[in-house]
Amino acid sequence: MNVIGISAFYHDSAAVLLRDGCIVAAVQEERFTRLKHDASFPFNALKYCLSCLDGDLDAVVFYEKPLLKFERVLRNAFSVAPLGFRAFTAAIPEWTQQKLWIPFIIEKTFAQLGLNVRGKIFFTTHHESHAASAFFASPFQRAAVLTLDGVGEWTTTSLGYGEGSSLHLLKELKYPDSLGLLYSAFTYYCGFRVNSGEYKLMGLAPYGSPKYKELILEELVDLKDDGSFALNMDYFAYCRGQRMTSSRFHRLFGAPPRRPESELTEKQCDLAKSVQEVLELIVLKMAKTLKQLTGEDALCMAGGVALNCVSNARLLRDGPFSTIWVQPASGDAGGALGAALAFYYSSSPRSYCSKDLMQGSALGPAYSDEEIESVLNEMGVSYQKMDTEASLYAELSQALSQEKVVGCFQGRAEFGPRALGNRSILGDARSPKMQKTLNLKIKYRESFRPFAPIVLAEHASDYFDLQQPSPYMLFTATLRSERRIPVPDAASMMETLGQVRSDIPAVTHVDYSARVQTVHREIHPELHRLLTAFYEITGVPVLINTSFNVRGEPPVCSPRDAVLCFLQTEMDCLALGSFWIEKTNISPTLATSVQQQVYAPD
Image (tube, rainbow, N blue to C red; front, side, top):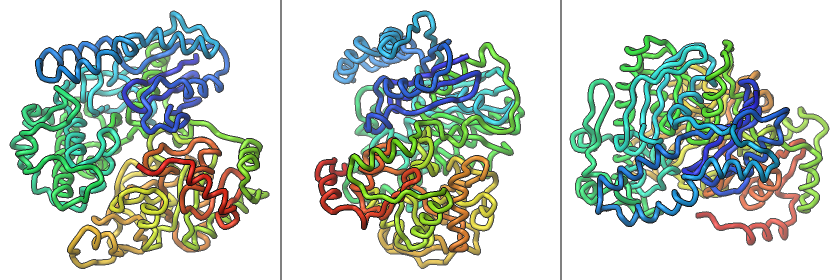
């Protein structure tokens, strides 16, 4: 059976092809359009998935129910009227011209791609899609399931369990009470972009103290012992407009929202730390309730909040479950996968497998050496073709050991928000200056943001206190005490940034934590071979891994994307398939031309 899953029209649109329960292809639309978090109907992603189709297409499944979602929009508008009228009238054309016509859009799009899907279109609910993406893609035959995000149709949180080919959702929270929207409100208030800047808020939290935690719990959140809660909507504005927070919220915390790109202060750090701890407290309480309801030892998670790796680590450390599996594409992109899986297992048995279905998340497009070489020749880029994979990794590891920054473009693009070695920028974790170099000269982003380490799985315990493997970079871990270097109290954030805290300073955050990716030979074989080559040269099995992109863009997808990004930044080298490219061998005229033609960082 061939099933296509689709998510669209909110953020991170995506398409997935499932064949007999196995994931054949999965990719976000943004990777083709180069528009970060692209919400448009995933025409290009569908085209890619259909290029992998073998046989007839049996079903197309959309990841939520538009009519149920429209009911929420209408009821919300009437409940707050006359407030929010301008925002409501601005949203209505999009609904009447697009979102209410999804079946017809699907039919028309597939017709353009040469397929008739009339009578083959189905819908799941938003949180059913999240839950299915978590459980059915996991390595467990039975497990508890927790989904948390901003909002789907009405549901913002669901608690349940999976068993074999069945999912059972037992409890839920509904809009406007939302853990995702609470966190996004603070993201907005601290001057970051909603549905994009939540990572920044999480990264900022270790610089602060939780001085506002009790105030949040007293004024904003009525939290119950079972983890359910109600938000005091007097402090929030998302029900009645485009802003997340109200003037009462601003008075409570003593200032209007921070202007984007303005200087960060101690206050934003303290706010970030406070709401992070509130989020962790709520998730822990929910997990304890879910354990009581199900009695399961394993937990599966999805939804945007499940991408909060600090909370995930706290839950693993202090929560009631012995093991946790988080869907790597936990956001709306993963909803496309969940929709397909939910439909498939509604009529098909599920056989047990000790491995997850995600294949290391390497589910997107790949490009042959012939395709890559054609692009390099067309663009006039000088290159060296390596005879063997071993010679390529030898060159790459040698460059990294010399503190060079290397773009790595290998195999299939990753599905989900994390780069896991196939579309990555790599650097030497031993270098005290590498974090600053990558932020300011390569990524063009805020200097406070930490970078993630990749470490050979067999050596992970030598560096990090990990309770379970982390192949998808979805858990933080603290650095082992013997790796740490004590530092004096710093007078400012910038002074803190310059402190060397360990023997791998470039990936050690200010609280000695790191968002770890454990690299396993059977999950990421190519990356494992590269790390092994670096380890043989340096004696250190750790590198920096960050996504191959600059601020404001999604990770690169095609060879052309990779070359353009390489030429726009101060990256030193590029490993593109079997090809090795050094910036020193690139014509300065070519590099300057590209930099002048492409965007300025936002």
